[in-house]
Length: 150
Image 1 (cartoon, rainbow, N blue to C red):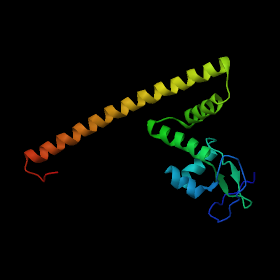
Image 2: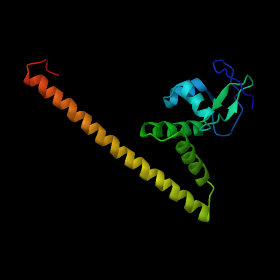
Image 3: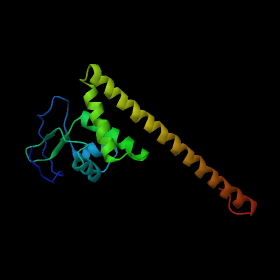
Image 4: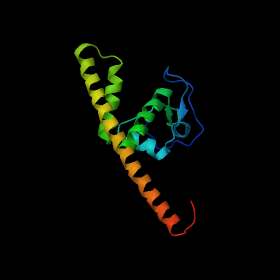
């Protein structure tokens, strides 16, 4: 694969992986709701690799690539590190073909990620409840002192 930094050009090679239609980074970014810069950062960090490159060197992504980006996007607000993201993606990739003891180990690791995500979601809910309580207190003080109603 040729490594170039440009991705804005109109060139697109219709051939490529059998995983479906290929899309350039701008469309991939729009579909997943990430910036082009963020996708490039995740590529530099080894979280995502474009499935193909056009003849002009433009990154080309498939639906499975977008699925990987969606996993990373969901992990980010929960405070997972890039290493943790990479580890989970490795587990998810390996589960497709693993059998026996290797599969059991991967499922245990996946369960640990589930537990960590659930714990972090609970912490975020607690933070949100605290923030909502604070906003309610301020609203009540405004009301008590004759301030504007919100």
